[in-house]
Image 1 (cartoon, helix red, strand yellow):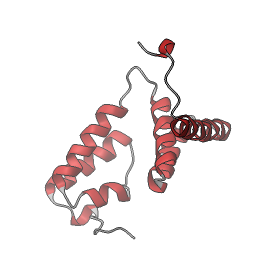
Image 2 (cartoon, helix red, strand yellow; image 1 turned 45 degrees about the horizontal axis):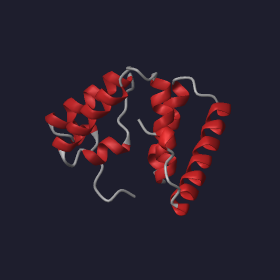
Image 3 (tube, helix red, strand yellow; image 1 turned 90 degrees about the vertical axis):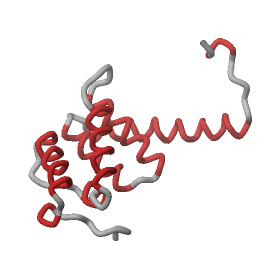
Image 4 (cartoon, one colour; image 1 turned 30 degrees about the vertical axis):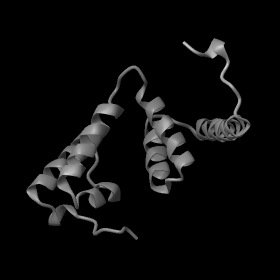
Length: 131
C-alpha cells in the first residue's frame, strides 16, 4: 500500500494530466502506472522526474534495451521490487529474453559478491586501472 494517495487521471489537476498525457503518448500506452500516480501528489516533482526519465532513457550512445537492462540490474541490487518489475517488463518489450535476464542476474550477483569482497578486503586499486 502506498504511503500517499494515488492520483488517478480523472482526479488529476490539469498540470498533472498534462504530464500523464505525455507519459502515455511517449510510451504508447493507455494507462498510468502507480509510480507516476504517487509522484502526482507533488506535480512539480512528477514533471521533473518525467523529464529526467525522457532525457536519460532516450536513445543515445547506449541502446534503449541496454539502458533498461542496466535499470533492472540497479533496481535488483537496490531491492526496489516496483522498479525491478517495471523495467523488466520494459526490457522484455525491447527484446530481452528470459536467457538474457538470467545472465544479467548472474552478472549482478557476481558483481555484488566481488564488490563486497574487494571493499571488505580494502584491496588497493592497481595503477594500470587508473587513467
